[in-house]
Length: 199
Image 1 (cartoon, rainbow, N blue to C red):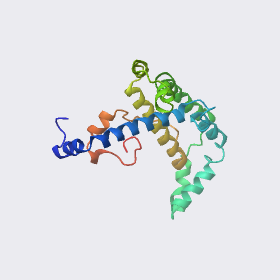
Image 2: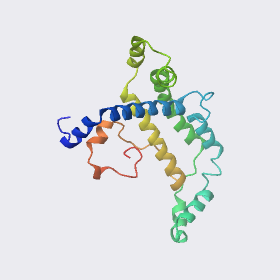
Image 3: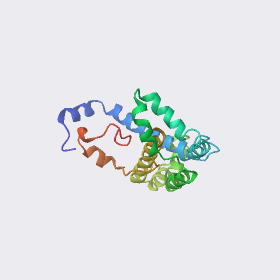
Image 4: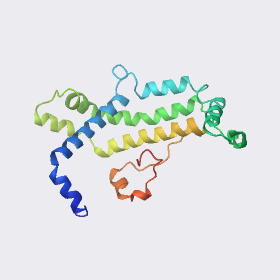
């Protein structure tokens, strides 16, 4: 707080109710979104498991070399000049590629189930817990750093699937900072607008 711009601090101090409301809204939205992604399929039919089911089912159509070539031709007026050479290095995903990515999601589902599911179900979505001591106990099981890692994984997964779809690359999760502290420590000009995590 000592390094904050005095004008920025003054603006925060003039409108504290807004910033408290915004913070809580973003916190609740993050918890609800994570619940939609990692919650049980019975109540969340479009969760991460259904995503991987669709990926496996459309592997030979959507991710085929032919489909990728069509996408590339649509995006480039001179595709005939570079596309044949580009297609030589294209990776068509195998089912084991998706299985490996799916397996990497399991620890994050565990994080949701052990730390955030009760918060989502009994505090955010349904406000079932009214006793302050019970609420305190529930939040004692959570760790912000684990939630940051979970969200970081989802951003890595997004990037990997995007590159596979648009560039025919192997689905590899590239390292990315998951700490908000690390991200805000960077200068704006050093952030890459193409990286979903940094955005």
